[in-house]
Amino acid sequence: MIAVGTLTLIAAVLLVTANFAFLQHWFAIHTGTLNESGPYYGFWSGFGSDLGELTLVAAIGTGTWSIARKHNCEVRGCWRVGKHSTAAGHQVCRKHHPDDHLTADQVLAAHRSAMQKPQAAPGRQPAGE
Ligand SMILES: [Zn+2]
Image 1 (cartoon, helix red, strand yellow):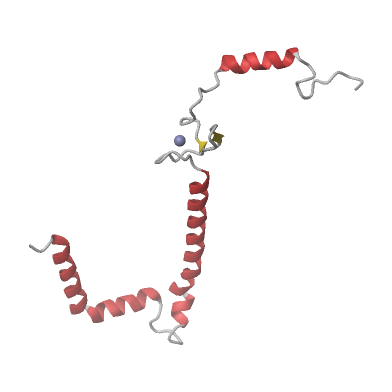
Image 2 (cartoon, rainbow, N blue to C red; image 1 turned 135 degrees about the vertical axis):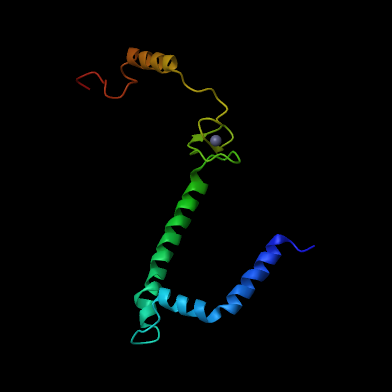
């Protein structure tokens, strides 16, 4: 039994073969290689000049992909930024970090503890030193 994809491919090849002259003319018009002063002038002035822009888009895409792969969470399938280190040295996101998260009460208690020890808090040094 021939798959539907194979039949579609055969039909597409037959259509292209039957209309090759029409498709060649259409391609020449849309790439700018028809009725120009030189055989490649129209191509490089029109459609061919976009190839340089395509390389820029590919470079930006590759760079973005590389940065995302380097800095994302190490848990498989997680796309969050992994900026928290575990005790074993893995870079994971806040959601996958094994320790509990800080609460507002813990931050407030740490702040009050630091304020009671003036020498430990930066910017709170006693005058005259
Ligand atoms: Zn994660």
